[in-house]
Length: 394
Image 1 (tube, one colour):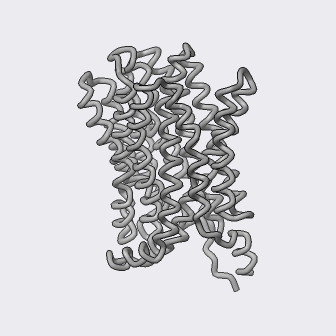
Image 2: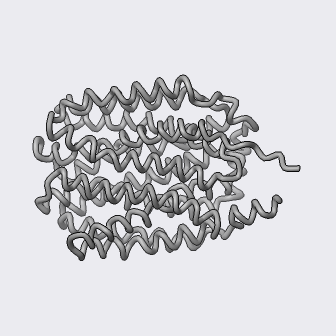
Image 3: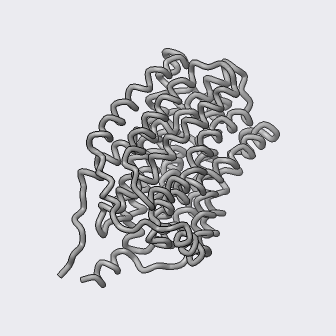
């Protein structure tokens, strides 16, 4: 007789909605960059440093949050983290000192670092035997938030100026209250509280697999964060309007959100590794096809490239959680956090390439990166599919 836990769809829905808002804020700073370039003559390198400050603080600290959350769930981190990030980012348009702006960006990143390990672990724990698909849905809501950012923020900044950032704290307050009242209780995490030695032992046993997974994510994150940072500046240099540019970024990111859901479904049937390798290898030629075509065809290629790049987003998180199953929050922190932070740090190099050799050269480097990540993914282990596991379980 099966004792599998029921899937808590309402909990997943609340956390997914919160994730969407959280990631609208996570893609906040790139939308400000074209306006900052006009008002402050910001260089590409300085723009990359600003985005990296948020990415690094939001990412590199996530494994620490993940470790402590594996020891004891901290429900309050999801709503306090969301509110903290909203407040810090809402102040960015009011400051005129670049270094203070970088400081606010770094402080804001701590909010999303607190949110992601706790929320993603809650989702996987209440997802029964549909972890890849439902975590993909959770991640897709985040990617939809990323996609909505340019559509919502660019018209706001263009119409009212950067001082309008102060009003963007309001959605953060709303979602923080929603999470305060409706997020699952601490006992949803249940189970064990691993010691540091147990965690180190788990990491040691899975080190080769985790190295491959984090390598894939770091390079994919560099491509992703780099495109979010450089594309608006590239489109501006190509004389596209801010609105037209925001529409193109939206198409790439929204297609990525859809690709993330499809990636979860495909990996469920055919395995994590084939999906990760195939989608990343395919993304590079699609991005180059976008840059070498025109009109509607180029938009189709951009949409397909975005879907390919992000279809493995949640699958790599699940792969890491399967590699260290007793430390799910740590796995989420390593994959959604640390590896992404390494990629975010390297965006500064891409910004420097843009300043020295032109934005077109920086974009070409970014387009090449997914195929490099796909090659590294070949070193991952081939695991039984989730579908096979369900059949075996009867």
